[in-house]
Image (spheres, rainbow, N blue to C red):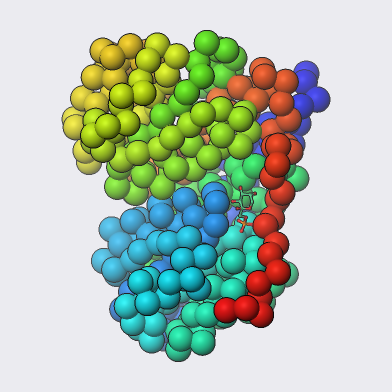
Length: 353
Ligand code: F1P
């Protein structure tokens, strides 16, 4: 057993049990959150975050809009305090939801403080640390305490914070949250079922560039998948909306490329066609398909049998996390501590803006 990435591997494999604990933690808070939402009655929601948490914000903003009907958008935390007029149409009618695993990333704290200076009425937090600065300054905090990590790379923290946002959107949208309670079991089967495949692909030194394609709410997940394999294994990786990949980036595709498609149920035919075309250009293709395996691929993983589309997003990442882990360890790297990175970016800018 490799000493490299011991925390990362354990945290990836613990996700199903951590998801169950996270849903329990949400259930204890949901009544007060629903009351606060009704009291705030926001006309729109702005999600912010940095790095992995920004990609999470992108995913969650699309899920929120589709499940609640409330206009929602996402931007990096830095954009909110550097270009507020470009980001905030009407601060007084906006609910800000700040996402941060640590709850201490300076850009996120500065963005919340700027939002309040602009008259923003309510700022909520999604974090893994209830005692963090962000959780303390927020009006409401959704927390995934069980998802705290020792590894720098966000894995269970990302999917658990995504689950918190899904549970909130589901509750607000009057959907049946019991469906989410099935995810731990489906996730456990998924991780067990694709462990060997992730190791096999991860340990292929001939693959040297990775493209992650996702559309709609899955575009943010494609971005997180791109970042995971970049951070953990120092590999060249890019992420695009599915159909955008034809408009130039596909020029890079060759036999050392792995094109990973996060297929949605909604746009499946269009997305599947892109993957088939990339295979014809010589790329290896991996399809993460919502229900049944995709035809004509080099590799295919079917995620979750009979779950509704809106419950699927958390399931797309564990396969990619495992692949990134195996590729890192196969290259002799430690995904627990990626080169040049620190777990939290602290800057000396809190009194500038
Ligand atoms: C944000 C973040 C991570 C990134 C790295 C540095 O942290 O950018 O997304 O992977 O660990 O910090 P946080 O605000 O979510 O704690």
